[in-house]
Amino acid sequence: MARRSISRKKLYEQNFPYKVDIPVPPEGLGRRINEMVAWCKENVAQWESHGRSEGLQDFARFYFMDAKTAEFFATRWGGQIRGVKRSWTAPLQ
Image (spheres, one colour):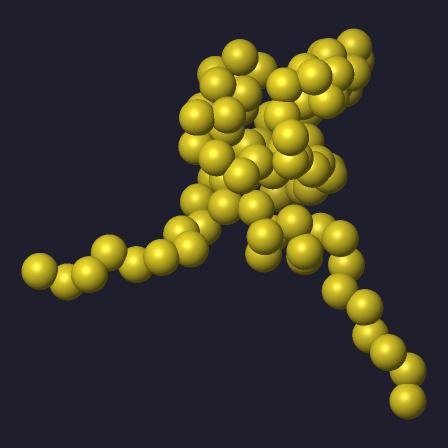
């Protein structure tokens, strides 16, 4: 029986609570993508990224473990935080 592996994209989606989508213009991100990756390498302990599409729009999606980093990154690079995954549920009052 063959083993099925989970794609990295699915692992990122499951394990990183904060996702930032950076819209990719028709001409591409150019040097900006290198600057984003360099910033992550210098400032963030745990992060990942991959590309994705929604209709005709392409995005560079970056994954982070904390809200502060995701918010800073989104503001600095013109992105939007998407689908925040909560690891806990607030108790009902």
